[in-house]
Amino acid sequence: MDKFNPEFTGAGIFTNASYMRMQANQHEMVLRQMGGEVLQLPSSCCYVRFHIGDFRLSYVYNINKSNRYFLERLKPYPLPLKEYENEEDVIETIKIDLEQFKNAAKSKNIASFIKINQELNKTAKAFEDLFLYYNVEKFHAESILNKIQEIEDEIRKTAEESDLIYDKSNPNYLSHVFPSNEE
Image 1 (cartoon, rainbow, N blue to C red):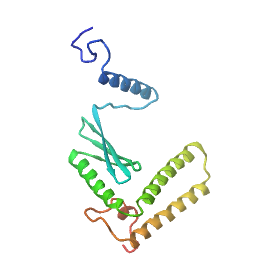
Image 2: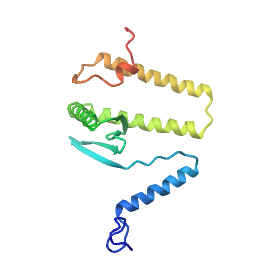
Image 3: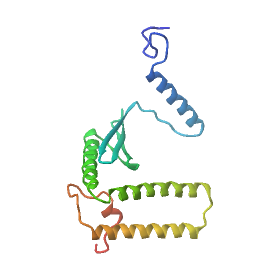
Image 4: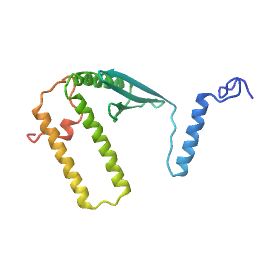
């Protein structure tokens, strides 16, 4: 055993880094056998957590050698946010999100807001199961699509009838996904 080999400790035991590389290589081999194209990038995974009142706001983002940052909110409900080209944009996004959640935490409806998002998340997962496990008739798919349209209409109506409480940035999706009929 080469005592200068960084793969081993003095006792000849694998280091955590070498174990992780070995695991990644095994995963890559299985995925390639399945027909996948695999690109392993050396990266660091960062976990960020904030406590706001009675709930936690947490994120995970990956920093890789290609200078790409993939940010995802984990709590209070999972939401992939975006891929960024620099750390400043990641931090700015988290900063704005944190401000918005601190502001929303003052609302008497924050628990309902979080519950609705969690239920929407579960519904999306259930729909995926439906799609992947069953041969769904066209009229069922159309019925589900109509109900989604009803929810979108209700979200639009609620936004139009509600007071804006955060004006330091524009909503990411409301204006794009639900354009007003007046436009």
